[in-house]
Image 1 (spheres, rainbow, N blue to C red):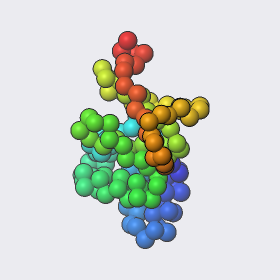
Image 2: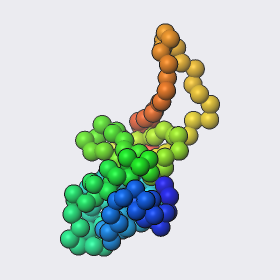
Image 3: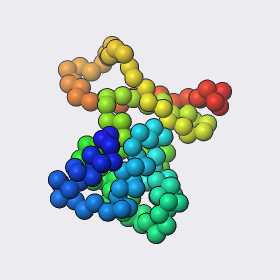
Image 4: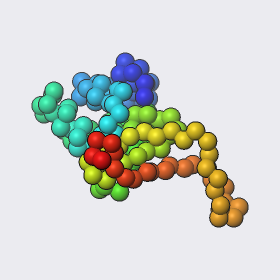
Length: 134
């Protein structure tokens, strides 16, 4: 994800409003490796800027996702998580505490059973127990 200042310019260039609320969200997301949900970002933003609306958080996340600045990921936990790391990678999810970690696969796995299916994208989610919970 680009820096908050770069996102401000990108939003303006896309004809989107840049508000103090959005700039706060840009800052909260920058280098955020926690894979936050909209609700957790809302809580963090509300602590710094009381009165920010959940709708503003959702709209900003939608705009950033549409611009390719965020990935929206559903881990099957009931809420989408947002990842500012848009490089190709996978994830490991702790079934005990819910922590989510980025995982990089060094070489492509050998796949069988695709019978001519052309893979254009993959996202692997490894589930288990993290070191802190083990």
